[in-house]
Amino acid sequence: METNIQPILDKALDGERLTADDCTALLESNDFVRIGLAAHEIRMRKNPTDVVTYIIDRNINYTNVCNVVCTFCAFYRRPGKPDTYIHSIEEIEKRIDETIELGGTGVLMQGGLHPDMNIEWYEDLLRTLHAKYPTFQLHCFSPPEIHNISLISGLDYETILRRLKAAGLNSMPGGGGEILDDEVRRRVSTKCTTDEWLDVMRAVHKVGLISTGTMMFGIGDKIEHRVRHLERIRQVQDEALDAKASDPDYGEFTAFIPWTFQRENTALGRKITEEPTGIDYLKMLSVSRLFLDNIQHIQSSWLTQGIRLGQSALRFGADDMGSIMIEENVVSAAGANNEANERDLRYQISEAGFIPQQRDILYNYVNREDATGLDTRNSMPLKQLSVAFAD
Ligand code: SF4
Image 1 (cartoon, rainbow, N blue to C red):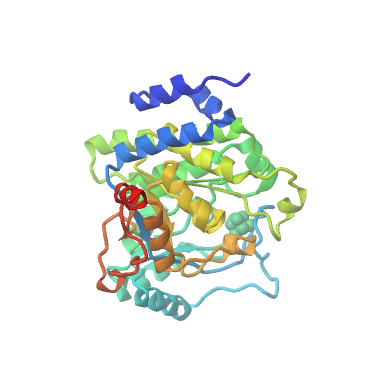
Image 2: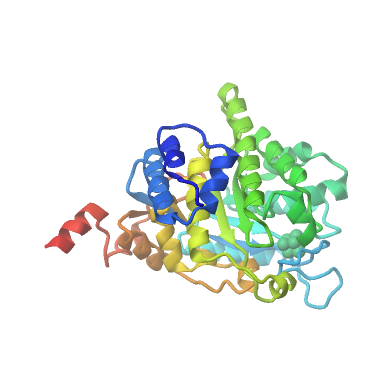
């Protein structure tokens, strides 16, 4: 018999922290609409505005050479294979110029785990870009990349991150999180362990950088693994916020972004028989909002889920639509071919009853004159929309 989840939702709505058992009961429940309603209520309390933010940036994958094997990845190429690449600085600058042309404020730069790139390569890259584009935000690398630099250079995470920050790094995406539980990770990847991923994030926050938490589920994980993943993210955020109470320069997770495994062209995709549905995605998103009571923003992942499900996420606890993603190579290699320009994204946000607002990586609002009028098809908040429909 299914657990009555209302007392758990009431607990969250009363501001009490949910336990792992509560989280399990919610994820096991079929009552996803009720969970979504509670998640939306908490979203509106945490971010009390009809605004839904989005960012204009671009994923630049500086290399596809990767020294480890992840069976869920369709992007990497083994060192020495003919179709490998490393972008030159000029190629990266060209992509940044195009991003700025489109109103972009930053870049998300990540790559495979190249066996020969030492810390100086990353420092040179950041220093060059920061000197040429001093206000353009460099949201780069991921815990597995930092762990890889550590293996190559012999330096500890904190030293690496202090050096990268000094060279111009603004923040770090939460890539490579997948499922933070070694029972699952070991089966699908030879990259860094759960503890290593979390320790890199602890060091990121310690050196005063912000980051995001992510989850890619549907890679053979069960509910218990997803719960443990959320617990670990919440724990690291608790530590960051405790430290921040006495040191305002401490970093933290600004957002959490769950999405489902994209299976095309991957070795794992040929094996997996059970895929999360759209409802599983919305429920995961809502439960993240309820369980991660210490994270401000929950992001919709329209790029992987499709624009309509991405839009629905805005009523299930998400307050941010993520990026218009001018370029993306990793999940698109695995079959996520969803596309949207700024106009589309603003329209989807408006149609869901919210006010679209561009932001930067730090969640500062960005107001561009050329964005005005991009959502002219419909920009009324929901209350006004209902009146319009009633008329
Ligand atoms: S997911 Fe990242 S670390 Fe894993 S194989 Fe792909 S590029 Fe390499």
